[in-house]
Amino acid sequence: MAWHKKPKTNITKLRILRIFVQLIMFFLLNLGFFSIGATWLVLPINYPKSLYSSSEDAFFLLQRMLTDSIVPLIPLASFFIIGSVFGRLFCAWGCPFGLFQDLIGVLTSRIKKYEPTSETNNSLRQIGEFITGATIIVSTFIGISLSLQNASVVENAFGIFIDQPWAVLSPSVFLFTVIPLLFWWGGIENFFIWEKFVLIDLVFWIRLLIFIFAIILVIYIPKGWCRWFCPAGIIMGQIGKHSILGLGRNISKCTHCGLCEDVCPMGVKILSHKPEKIRSELCTNCLDCMAVCPENALELKFL
Amino acid sequence: MRSNAKAFIVLGLGIICLAIALSPEEVTRFMNMIIDFTKSAKAGIPSP
Image 1: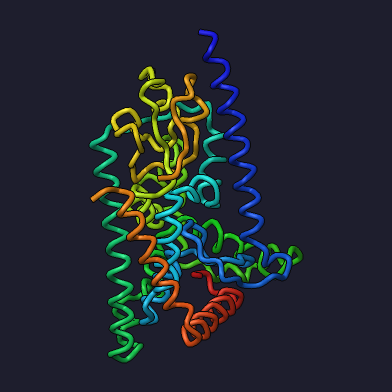
Image 2: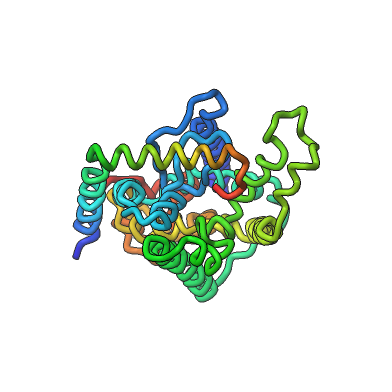
């Protein structure tokens, strides 16, 4: 049908625009490269502290504050304020690990993608929620233990998880912190100084394995890491499904063609949600559904 | 409870957290922590 052409062009334009915005955000998050140091910006995105970052990842800061026995007011404020107003908007438009996943999606667009069933989605999401909850509980426990006991006893008990438990497992730490430290630290003239490779230890191999798993996951399931395992995404999903900004569906225009569900990178079952607002913990307001709708039945709205 | 009401309750909580966090003592503590954090990252420790 003729109308298929217009949505296809729209969605290509929108995806290019989104990658462009993500690249600008990545540039703004790395102002340290231009000797602009740490800023006050605490964002609910998957971008841990790296060599040149000028912002803070809210979830990593939350862990850090809990393990230091500090009430994590600023990360909580970041999650609550940004999540309640914009939902998971930053996941689609500002997260560097989201950009990495989008780029992998573009590079492997010829490979057949899989859409898991609702049951698989829910089960894997529960694993992510469990990991997020466990990370917060362990971080709190480390903080309390450190303030009550000898630090060396606690360090022996928690081992590699003592600093920030999720940092050991997170593929974004491997991509944005470990790899740049291995290769870029010390300048281009020291690119292959082998002494730097003493940093390779057990934690390195654990991170590498999880990183490879994340890449394979994302090749076959679009935004697989965002959907199920990103702790910031899981927290933002719970807050963001009640956000002020969100997508609504005009039922007088909607023909239930299902194109919106087909293109949704997060696999949201848009047509099964109430039309006035799509309240899904997975929706990142990427607007792919809006761009593809031939009837313009979907719209971004406040309240 | 309507979703909009939930959104405003969470927004209010966020603003309260921010207001407490921006008290002068908290600001100093927070900035010191960020500075320490940046120094340790630049000292070559792989975990952030």
